[in-house]
Every structure is written in structure tokens, then in C-alpha cells.
Amino acid sequence: MNHDLLTRATLMRTAEVGDAVMGQLIRHHGPDEAVALIRSGTLPEPFIARVIAAADHPDLARAKLLRRLTTWHARLSASDPAADLRAGEQFGARLVTPGTPEWPTQLEALGHGVPLGLWVSGSADLRFACLRSVAVVGARASTAYGVHVAADLSAELGDGGWTVVSGGAYGIDGAAHRGALTADSPTVAVLACGVDVAYPSGHTDLFAAIRRQGVLVSECPPGVHPTRARFLIRNRVIAALARGTVVVEAALRSGALNTAGHTTALGRPLAAVPGPITSEVSAGCHRLLREASAVCVTSAQEVIDLVGDLGTDLAPPSRGPVLPLDALNDQTRRVLDAVPSRTAAGPATIAVSAGVDLPTALSCLGGLAAAGYIDRTPKGWRLRPTRTPTTH
Image 1 (tube, rainbow, N blue to C red):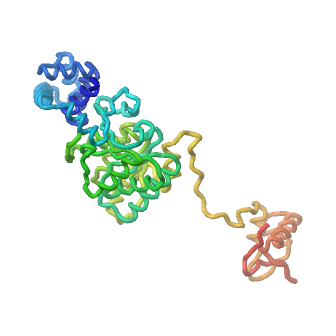
Image 2: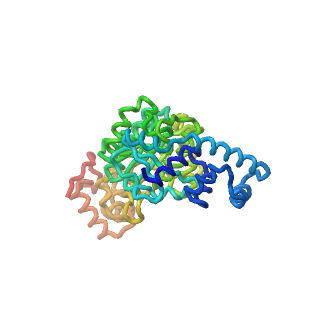
């Protein structure tokens, strides 16, 4: 078996997901030496000093680090990386590691918290799929409104060539994945368990569809079940894979706001969808908007405008329906406003009321009559009662 994959698989069994201390150890000493140090039960003093200096409570940091090393040593001794790789292969999963062609380089923005590797199951290329991607996240206990918005946004993003990244959970996440699938677009589900574990179980068919059209992704080795902590920790990966994040619905305390926080920390665009002010599951979105942490979006075009390439992915400006009056110039509008609706007025009176000279008033009145806005009567001009102008 590939030596680098075995080493990474060993470390992924040794450390908990998102372990920034392990990330530092690998960054400073490399994967192979990290395994050797953990196996020996010792860490270099310069490394210990760096960890202690960066800790919030330096006086407790050494003891905490040594306890962590003891845990690593025990886990490393019990690990079987070859079995993990065989289990992944049997399920159709592959281990993607930093420096390999499928590795999304945008994950490096996580610093010491970058994943040690990612288990990937599905037909899409993870790196390619995430080049133009948006995270769409939200409440598990979503409303019909939220599900509708998430599905529509994701379908339109998929139609526009964008990959939707989400967490595979019930509610908004599931709606986002389904919307992307209807657009025949890849979608990426970042799980808090092994890619061979269907959690939630009600999404077994959805995960199968995602594998056919996109990918399931996890930092957890095969067979690992989710914990509350892993759900929160995996949110940083959702935020880091995508160019930006859209929160569709979120309560004031929710995992979606955790993802929003990671997005902001990474300096990526954050958007929120407004909802009814009476809805508890929109309260988190409204707080993000009120605090100016997120940009208000109401369409996929606005999302793409926010996260896309400057000058290429601009959304058209929002405007109301085009009315026949929009074609009138300023002087003609003023003349029309000066024409009475119940009585009639002569051209001179209309010219004075509109603030234009008489020749201009006569010219505008002729054009307005031809367009069907006004009628000429024996006593002067008046608005046409039906107000149904002809089109030219």
C-alpha cells in the first residue's frame, strides 16, 4: 500500500478531527516524524514551548499537552491504517491527502486546523467540484418556506455551474442537496461520521444519489459514528471548501451560525436569507443581517454576485415591472401630470402648470394623444378615462 496514505490514515485514527496541535506537529515535523514522535511518547522541547506560548493558560498547557500525547500514543498503538484503507476501498471511498491532485487547496486557509486528510466517496472530483462552490446551510427544524428557498437557490446555483456544499443533515441541508441534484450539478456533503455511515439514516437514498452525482466527504475514518462535537468541528470544512456561505434559516443557537462564524473568520463572503420576523428559525439570519455580518440575498443571482468573479458574475440590478410610462422623457411626464382628469385644459394652461414653454407643451400633447394617454375635447385636453395607451 501507498506509504503516505498509510501514514495519514494512522494520524487520522490518532488525533480527533480538527486537532490544531496535531496540525502544528505535522506542519513543523512532517507526517512520518510525527508518527515516530508519538510512538516514542516524547515531543521536542521547542515544539512544546511553541504550544505553551500560544496557549490561553500557559501554566496548564504543558500538562494538557502531555495528556494529549498519552491519548495519541494509545490510539496510534490501536490503529490499523491498512484495514481503514481496505474498508474505504470496499465501500468505494478514497483517501485524499494534501499535495495530491484532488486535494482542494483552499482548505489550507484553515491553518493548523486543516484536515489531515479527507475520505471521499462519489463520482465527482472534489477539487474540481469546489472551484466554483457555495455552501448552503440552515436549520434542521426548517419550515416549508426555508426548504423551498434552499431547494430553489441550490437548483439555480447548479444551473449556473456552481456546486452546492452542505452538511447532509435534515432540513435545509437536505433541501440544498436535493435542489442541486435536480439541476444535474455536483453537490458535496461534508459528514460528521465515516462516509460509509448513513447518518441521518433517513438520508440513505439521498447519500446514494449524492455519490452518483457528487461526493460525500469526511475527516472521520470508515465506521466512525458522529458526535455533537464532530458536527461543529466539521462546519469549518464546509466553510473552507466553498467560496462563500448562505444561511437560509437559523435559530439564535444553531450549527448554521457556527458555520457562519467560520466563514467570517476565513474572510469569505457570508449571506443570509430574510424570513418572517415571527419565525424563530429566521431569528439567527436576522441577527446576522442586523449586525452587518452577512449580506441579504433573495436569489441565486445575488449569491453569485457576492461570491463570484468580479466583473464576470454580476447580478442584474433588481427593478419592478417595466411600465409604458417608463418610456416617457422628463418633459413629457411633467406635461402628462399637468393634464387634468375630470375637466379639460388648454395648451397654455398645461404649459404653465408643467413648467415648459408652449411649443414644448404642444409637441408633448401630440405625442401623448398618439400614445393614447390623453384625449382632445372641445374645451381642451384631458386624461383618457380608460388609461390604456397604445404601444409603438
